[in-house]
Length: 301
Length: 301
Image (cartoon, rainbow over all chains, first blue to last red; front, side):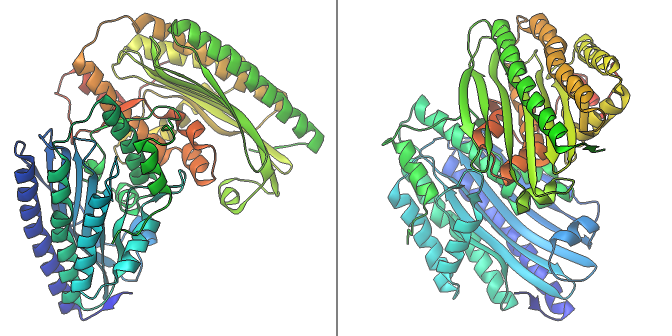
């Protein structure tokens, strides 16, 4: 559902989104640093040869977060052949501004989490997109309920259909080759139309809401004890995260095929991962309980 | 360059290839077990719902090999929509018999290695395909020269063009998004025509030659001392192996998209992997020397 508007209106909306995601990046990095208490985000600014660029911020080897990335990009230019095949709409130029967050905690009892929002324009049409999702290694029902409840409230405040966006996330964050969902879902919206300012405000709420949805879970779980068994399971499940991002995630594949900045795109990959052959959790174990939920998504809020 | 032959001839060639790869699997697993000296291969037989099946053999946590897989499959059935898009030729039925080997050693001074051969038939046409390649973490010129020299001799004995197959490997085992080759190459041939028996004999030679090409390198390097630095570099480079297999390898993507047996396809993924953000080796270091070769393939034989 593209938004059609006068070029000057679309220019203004793009600039507003670029400003918003830059401000959000500062805010989100600061909040994650406070939650970590030890490590700081590094900053890499990069330029895109065809137009625009971005700022990639990554924190590594923290006390709470093993790897966290918060990226913004604001790019524009000619629609090349590769890009044209994948973008909807018409027109020879495109512009995009977005924010992408991926957090890989150290403790297997703290879920991995992701959010992103973006504004995309081609010619006279524009779309907003984004989402947020939670990937636990061990299931705490109250964490899933909390995450979804915050996202539901974010939707309700902006007249957005939580149910539809939740179902779209269940559909999108799915490893078809495994018959498993990546995690316990969240929101996903791919081409959101509507009023330019109101829809941007919703995107900002999703990004800011990510902190409210996720940080209380981090604080609740980060000091729980765990052992080698839980750590290995986390590293095995992180392998599924890699499989999803490299095989099925449209944003990652799009970026790699259109020569985006590789290290910014792949900051989403977990810091350490294992692929043992054909590992199956014991029936009745907490690991098996997680798999049950990944195979049959629940309604959490 | 498809091979066209009478159905009975193609049936016979298929059966011969299926028999050959089963025998090679036994031989190759035995040789790898001897080289390892500690761990043994497990065996999983599986059936394909649409017709045929395979035997997956994996060795894990050995003294020399951290993870090694030797798979055979012999499948047949109707050409579905997914498959039809990807297979060449015409006809409503297909049959395929093949062998695939991936070895991930424990020591970062021993290269990872891979080989595969396959017979593929659709309707009245058939193709052979396969290859072998070496992925070192640290560069020993004599190892690369040995690996390629064995493959060159295998080609020469069967009147196959080593130069063309070597260049095809350099082209195929390439991570476009990184501008890096996966390793130091080897052979790659995708649709080899010619005489049914002679071309199968070449495929057998490539698979058996893999042992001659690879095991002397394993024995030469397996007891060399290494430390945390070398191990981390190995785990980071193994990440590139994952990126290649999940993003660019046609066999892997084909298997995942056409619902092959996931654990057999993904046995190729390394046992432990790291993705630190934007790691760059020191100029002048052995790690940087490897990158130079991965960015500009050399002629080794």
